Image (tube, rainbow, N blue to C red; front, side, top):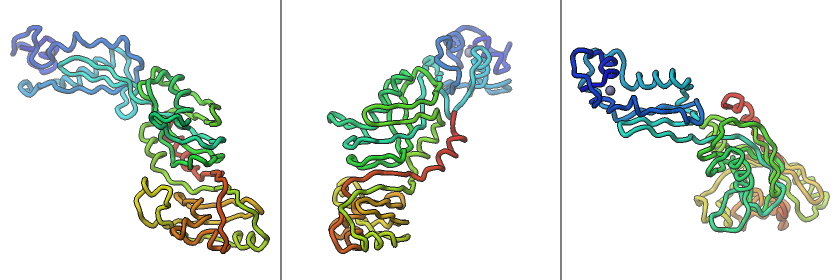
Amino acid sequence: MLCRKCAEIYNLEGLVSIGDRCDICKGIWDRIDLSELPSRRVSIRISGFDDSKYLLQPKTTLNRAIKDLLKQRYGLEIDNTDPDVYIDISPDGVEISRAELFVFGRYWKLRNYVSQKRWRGKNISSVEESIGKVVAERYGARDYKMHASGREDIDAFNIGGRPFVLELIEPQHFQVSPELINTNGITAIIYGRVRRVFRSLVSDSHFDKGYLCTHRELDDAEIVRLNDIRNIKVSQYTPRRVERRRVLKTRYRKIYSIRAFRNFSYIYAEAGTYIKEFFHGDGGRTRPSVSEILNKNTECLSLTVSRIYDRFLDIAYRRYRL
Ligand SMILES: [Zn+2]
């Protein structure tokens, strides 16, 4: 038995008996009500309907017909990769769920002893929480996750602006406008909404960086010696301070240049260089190091990420913004 609508779709009018207990759609037509939809930008996913016995000369398919009807009745805009809302339709009924919202921003960490990620059960403030709370509240989201391009050490500052994508879980609003956030020693700019694919573009990226290190006083000869450094290759065996978190192996990174002054230096280095270890040498695990070059123990007393060479993301943003 088919309902009148399905009999028409499958071109079987007059060939099968017509009634309310439809073999194909299980009466789904009367059970779809989308009047409470939070946004019209949707992805419709239909599953579980079996029309295999009725495929003689169909005009269309049930899936197609449901989508066409909904699009027309509710003025929906279909976006299967970046919808605001998922509509799942099956013989069991209709389920509506909110998609994640992805926003692109950069943060500046003007205070140290703030970690990037939230620590469950630990009373330590984080960049993720400082920014996430404000933005999640703005868009009525239940939760949030930060996907940043790398991270600085907990005791380091960042005045270069680190790119991130904030993922908002079950948001109420989907229109993102730019804003400036100042909270807890963290400054962030939210640029706008981006497509889902932009998240991994940011979290998988590795950018060269400029660092500002303070150190003990150098004499003139030492300053000259450091300023002479151009494009040296440094081998770094996994530093002792991260050996429990990172694979144990030797990594090769480039130091492009150094501008040394009496008690601070700018270091321009390849993505992924361990800068503190480049100064003290980590007991011979990093070679060469500033200590080795100057033949004197030298430490980076405070570390600031002063520049991130990430212009690529601004270009990509123009393409992936929503
Ligand atoms: Zn039917």
